Length: 271
Ligand SMILES: C[S@@+](CC[C@H](N)C(=O)[O-])C[C@H]1O[C@@H](n2cnc3c(N)ncnc32)[C@H](O)[C@@H]1O
Image (cartoon, rainbow, N blue to C red; front, side, top):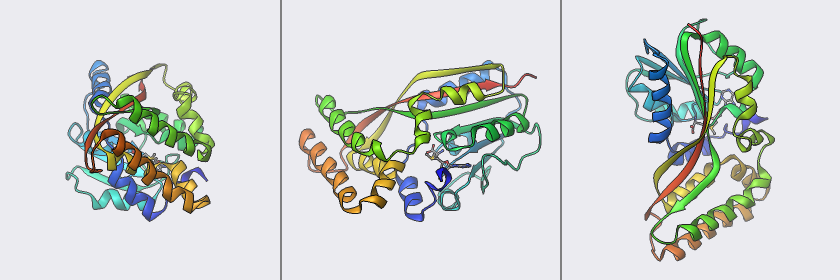
C-alpha cells in the first residue's frame, strides 16, 4: 500500500515540478559529516527513494557516480526525463532489495522517503551495501513549515497550516515516523557511530504557486483527491486566493520564502 502512494503518472509529474531539493543547511550537515568522518574515496553515492531526483543531483557534484533508486516506475521516468549530469543514473528497485554489491557504497542517502520503506529489511540492505568507512544520511522534512513574506508571515503561515490541517486526516499511518522525527528509524540504524539532528532549518525560495503545488504533491492531498475530488479541487485554489489577498498581490508567481525544518540521521560504518 505505502509504496503505491507515488505511482501515478500525474502525481509523479506534479512531484517533479513542485518538490524542492535539499537546501543549503541540510546539504551542509551531510557534507560536514562526510568530512568529519574522513569518508574518502567518494566514488559511489546511492539515493534511495529518489523520487524524480530532488536529492540525487546535489550529490552528483561530490561523487564519482550517483545512482538514484525508486520503486516507482513513474517517478524514475520523470527523473530520467529531467536534465542531469553524465555521472547520474536512475533505476527502479525497492529499497529493501538494492542491486549493489556488498560493501560497495560510499554514501547511502535517502531524502523524505525512508518512512515508506520496510525499515527492518531496508536496514539490512544498508548494513550490507555500505562499505567500511562509508556513511549514511537519511533525512526528512517535517511538518514544521512556515511561509515568509514582508510583515504578513504569521498570517500566511496560519492559512498554510489550516489547509495542511485539513489534509492530515488523509495521512498514511507511516507519516507517524515523520511526526516522531524519525526516532524509530534512527534506533533501527545498525551502526553504533550515529547521530540524529532534529533542528536543521532551510529557507527555500518559492512562489505562491509553488506552495500550492507543494501541497498538491503531498500524499495526503492525493488521497483526498481520490476520496472527494470536488472538495479537494476547491481546497487549494481557496488557499491560493487567501494567500494572495493577505500579501496584497495579484500574481501567484510572487516570490516568498518557505521555511522548513529537517531531521537528519547520520551514521558511519566502522572502517
Ligand atoms: C516523498 S517521496 C521523496 C522523493 C525524493 N527523495 C524527495 O526528496 O523529494 C518518497 C519516494 O519514496 C519512494 N518509495 C516508497 N516506497 C519505496 C520502497 N519500498 N522502495 C523504494 N522507493 C520507495 C516513492 O515512490 C517516492 O518516490
